[in-house]
Image (cartoon, rainbow, N blue to C red; front, side):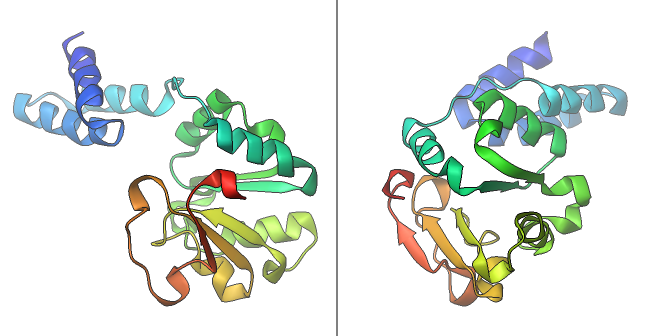
Length: 178
């Protein structure tokens, strides 16, 4: 109960990104055993998140679903799958890849999941159009293949500067502009 209360409080203060790090520090200060740490980590990774899709993002998915969309997302497969289900977006995508399913070395910017997507759609990588927000990892693979990339300048990466093939072909201020 104490750990859960701490995690909830941390979430309110820092958002979900700060929970894991703060919880590890919490355990370190209290010399709690590794089994308990793993239990808490699994609770975080495999809980059903209380999240909802932004209305503008839903509108875009509804608008383009018939064209054939794919989703490529980094992170623990269980965590990402729970997010996809909680958002109710799987119905919009013909192809979904959680990169860690194939190994952490297949995370973006690896071209691996982009190549799978192109193959599943029967197109070349140069035919792909990819929309993302993180210039550190989202655009390199598709840029290197000659595809089109679109960066949404919103969220935590909106002010991040990128150069060369790390930057998208085009930038937009919000997902609703697609």
